[in-house]
Image (cartoon, rainbow, N blue to C red; front, top):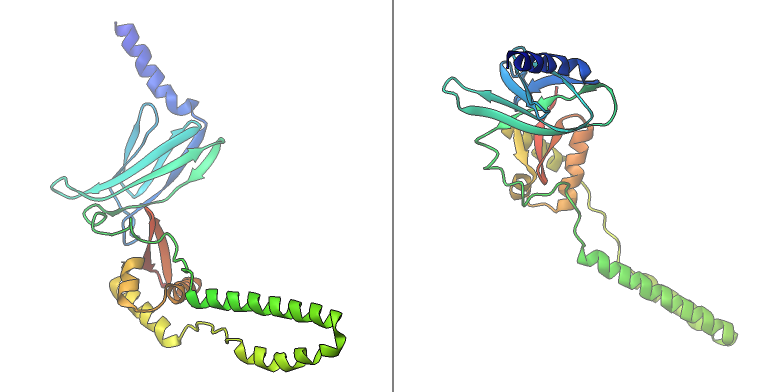
Length: 240
């Protein structure tokens, strides 16, 4: 019995040396501060768990799919921040995976299920009408061209119709992004630190296409960061 227990203990000690891959990284809270003394675990067999005293972790793992969990508790033992992250190990090597934890009591309040993973542009009835008009005009021109080919003496009708057709063409309006709207959106995100796309749509009575353009503009300037959570995005003010 003692020999069996000793053999099992030796096998457990040798497991890290038999694993061919190392995955490591840092653990951050929602404000992007290093989360010291957080508890990090990975779903290997057996499960590995460490306390990231300085906010860093490292595991030796085999090939496969695993779930990395990180949590930070308060003095009373309640979980303050938490995150689950899935990682796939296909080849041996060194993998870096930083973890960003979210407030455990705040995730339920964020309405992410009905949010957009990306702001999409819905079909605009005005655009549909323009497409139909363009198709109709093309058919009219084809008919006139065929008619003139068959009866050249009646081609004058083509020249009479051109001014009227040009007048009937609707002007395609491009939705411009006003500077005041971008400044307003930037101030809104900066003031709230983090917002969902649904909250932005409620605060700004603009079209989804225009909001999408403004968010992309602010992201390209490095002022904001989009964090994907569930089926939606959280917009975080990230200006250095």
